[in-house]
Image (cartoon, rainbow, N blue to C red; front, side):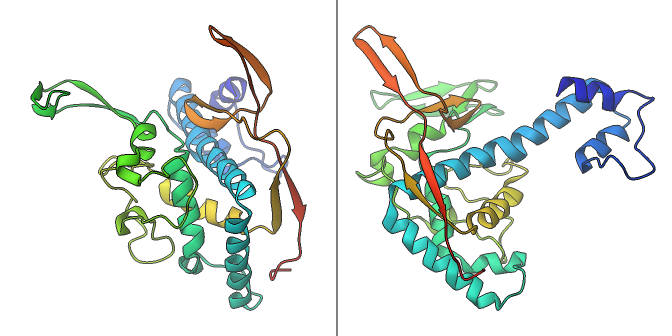
Length: 276
């Protein structure tokens, strides 16, 4: 990527006039930018990270959870098939995505269970504040204190989500403000609450959340049946910048002995759908 950025930021670099080779919009924006190479590199890295890495990991976890829960997968297939039947052969539009309520719940549950940014966000207090300490007494936090709003511990807290907080349950009782409103009025509002913030909290929510929400729903409608392959009993997620599944098998030695970690193992079978 760095080599690409160096080339794209070179003043002598120009887009081809004959239309070949084809360059993507991001490369075009970099090539015509007046920013220094370091800024262009940062902008491209942020776009690729936020626009692909986070969404890709979330979709992987969604497919994996559906593979592990065939009943939920079958319910979602019925909704998707009915969605395409309602289109009567035309291509789906953005507003059509408002008619996928169970898909909304599946994606929301995955964002809760496997938040893309599990470590949350880092903030600096602009005003003096206080929190309740372990003994019930207030602990003063002066202006300028660095704080971290962790998603993983809140999203899986049984006191906030009931005893099945560690289990994939799209039918759980979400608050209205926690469910995304894609394809309808209010779609720009970030799904969040005190216990749930997969895209951080307003006013500094993820800039690409609306695009990601649309992208995940369009990808999820592809026709395939997913199943869990042998070896998924002991799976492992890695919190390296984003919460992604481990893709290689390995054995780690701990003081209590060895533990074998495995990546997610799934298989997909093409199927006939209403869209075909």
